[in-house]
Length: 357
Image 1 (cartoon, one colour):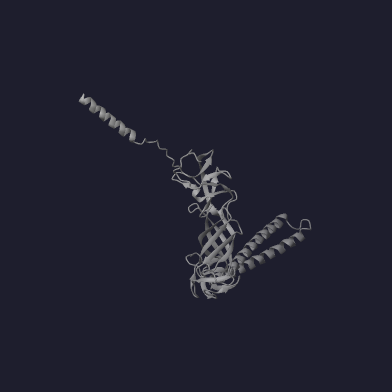
Image 2: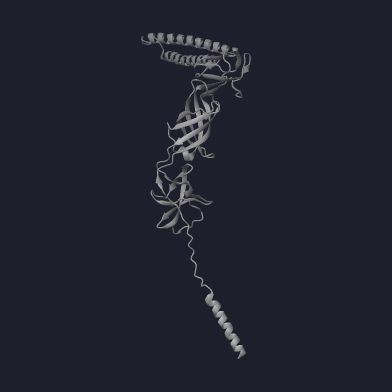
């Protein structure tokens, strides 16, 4: 009986403790991810990009000798401004003068022979009017010799003219107006037409320069002729100069993936020089066929580049190709539609098919 009462007391105590404990309610995870949505816009992104460039002469030429000879006179020096056709230097080559003299004498001799043959042929034609006076064979022979002497005379005349042309190469003239930027010969020096290691003179047209810049292919496609280009040079700190695109190479370098463009730069005051380094700021209006989204909406992984679009209330990854961009917006090309919603703060953690409220 004693043991029965003890057990009963223990049971009552346990029941009392159980009744006093608060009952635990099932918890519900109320944490949800908030996604900020952005709208896909029509039109490209106007952007500015800074690129290195250099100034080059609009025209430049390295002047080498056409014939072998000795330098007789050098009439210009480094920094000389010359006009087109200006005599720059003279050479002397006695063997060329003798060859030209011999060619002239040969031409004169063959011309005289041709004149005699022509006179003889004309006399035979006159006598041939009397039947039987001239043998047909004799007439044919004289005519054949006349034609042969005519061909020889023409050949000697061409040779004489060629020798005169070669003599003309002894006078070196400027092919265009410009400035002598390099001189490597002096009077008495022997120059060889077959050796091209160093030019006699270097001529550059610096009154009109070319600004040459290599533009990434993603941006060059949107550049058109007459688009504005701003540039700065170290020799004039803080001075902004404006130019317009004059030429595009229409060729993308397969290694660097860029295209060469050129801007014409007038330089009548001579303050700029070819070879100067320049910093270029290119302004582009963007591609009208492109779509634009916030830059943070584009996810770049090791396998793909995409945005997360919201379709039928669920996340869907759409592969895209990006174009020009600014600090906040970027151009995209892909299976997107204007006005469609994309997740602005997208990341690789968002799974395909996730419900988006």
